[in-house]
Image 1: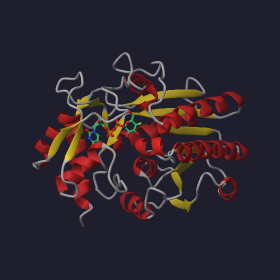
Image 2 (image 1 turned 180 degrees about the vertical axis):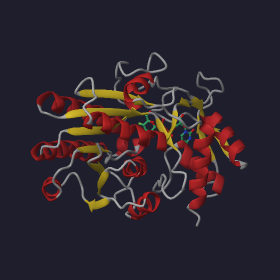
Image 3 (image 1 turned 135 degrees about the horizontal axis):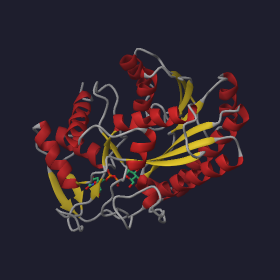
Length: 339
Ligand code: UFG
């Protein structure tokens, strides 16, 4: 079954781990990335892990001409896994047009050039942010979508709609994967999350605090209606997430889909609070983390976790790593950055 897969954003956090899984499963992998939030050295790390070198092209999806040329120069692409997008929630509220321009134009150009090239399969990187604060937990794929809290979240929602509309009017088949909170790193610690500047997300901030790059982790709010007052999320190991992309692209290529456009939640089904994360991190890694409680972060929801049963039964996928494994690998990765 393996064929040729284009991975946009393939040098990024989730993209790079997905490239590893695809190569290990005998797919030919072509990466396009504009390197706006990643490093070209990741390509060598992927090669080091897998013994196979993905084809890399530095390319911005907003540049339609270059994208068209890319498809002309690389015929026979069987499917696309589309990660490339801006993803900083806070920055998106500060510069909404930057986010709408990049994330929507990238998607439109990609779908357009795929159509011209006769490439009819896309797996799209979406987010549980489209649910906002769900009324019912765990959240299933048919939960009503809420108004997005940020322009970033809105771009995910709009891109899902664009994909669905394009599926409805062309030969395209699409799968949108709604990720919960990806953390951790490849066990080799050769690839992982590389936040530029001050991290926005909990786990990179936590590991940077533990290693001494940051003074103290700010816990945003301890007055939520949860077991310890801190916010709850469904954290998922990035390698589990990467395997789900393999299952999704296999499903499209082997025509096992039930509908031409499908959506899957990717989470473990278990929610942990911020304090659960800190305490588990300290326990499994034997390090202390300075932390303090501060006000709630604007735009944060109280709690969310997935009902992943559709992905379990339809994709045949299940998250395998527990929280301890995820936090061990996150710490190993942070320490590897010192070298
Ligand atoms: N948190 C802290 N301190 C920090 C960072 C985060 O207490 O320094 C807390 C947050 O308040 C939240 C939890 O840790 O309760 C997780 O926060 P993250 O920023 O790691 O993740 P979010 O759930 O806010 O956001 C993630 C992704 C987004 C995506 C969103 C969907 O980063 O891309 O999930 O809900 F849109």
